[in-house]
Length: 157
Image (cartoon, rainbow, N blue to C red; front, side):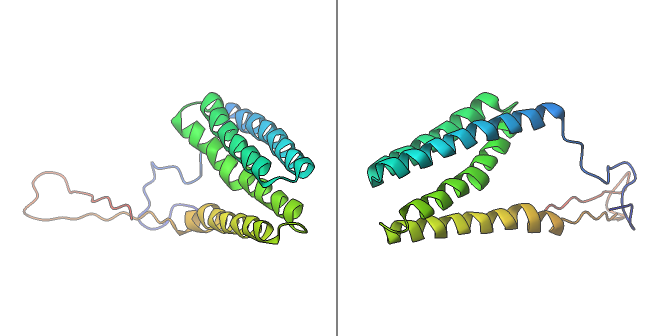
């Protein structure tokens, strides 16, 4: 995205680089959560109990939240990690649960698979479609009623 008509030359035209600290924190979070995912799925597979599965899923959610709080650099870093937890690890847990429960409890398996698909659909919209729809344009309004410099309205919609 270069400087088009009406673009402001002082604004960056590319996203800022990913800082090594954020990347290493994200990698650490995802590795720990992958171990949690595997432990929950192995526990549910071994126990074959809906109650144990629910407890494991709840504990994985609590672990995702606590890890995001502990590892996030700030609030935004914590929310970034929580997004990984929801859009990656919850999908992995639900898809794995669908595989585990399919022969014995088909309703639970279908519910898990549909929920995983809906989360993936939301992630596709949030991370692949919506960011490309953003548009920045600049307009100058001049009026005799405004004194001094021209005013530039800012609309974020």
